[in-house]
Image (cartoon, rainbow, N blue to C red; front, side):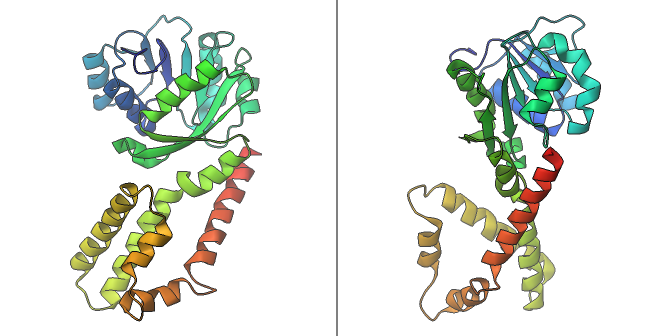
Length: 274
């Protein structure tokens, strides 16, 4: 079943917190089952234990062979601690996929000397519901078949966008990795603006939350329609939306503000990577 889904026949997942668990759930939904999956997680949640038992995954096995793919989903600061214990899992030419923020390919290669085929990936939190998007970069040693396997593993929690330069992962982090927080904050501020306009807070919160969720779904279901066209469809000349957009689209409005925010996030990602 794994091969039919494009997934590797054996995978070791190192770290099964929220993102690691989301990946496992995605793999299971795509048909990956059995002892070919090993999970290394010192503090397994009840959900993880149940999933492992139902799917036949091996949770913290005492003995394990080097897998076809090793997926690192631990906290970045734990890499130095964990690396020695998983060095044997990185057979030469095995695929290593890292979702460790700020850890570059050269950082991973230095700590896992056997590893050369490394994919650096940056998913985002909607992966928890299978609606994420992951930016990914493949090191030169990654073969076309390994890239296909990496794509299948990452696509189990949403879409995958490949970039040709590792430096662009910092921009990916700033746009989509951190992006959900920008959207949530927009809902917060839209709610407060509704309260300022006279609405009860609970009503303003429901209006803001559902408006953003609905607009996002409309955007998703309209892949051939640009966001600008969708905006124009809502905007009647001289109407209420046009009046609001005059403020949002001013020279000191939302556009320049968001550019500054993304630049700040990218700059911080570069600092963490450096």
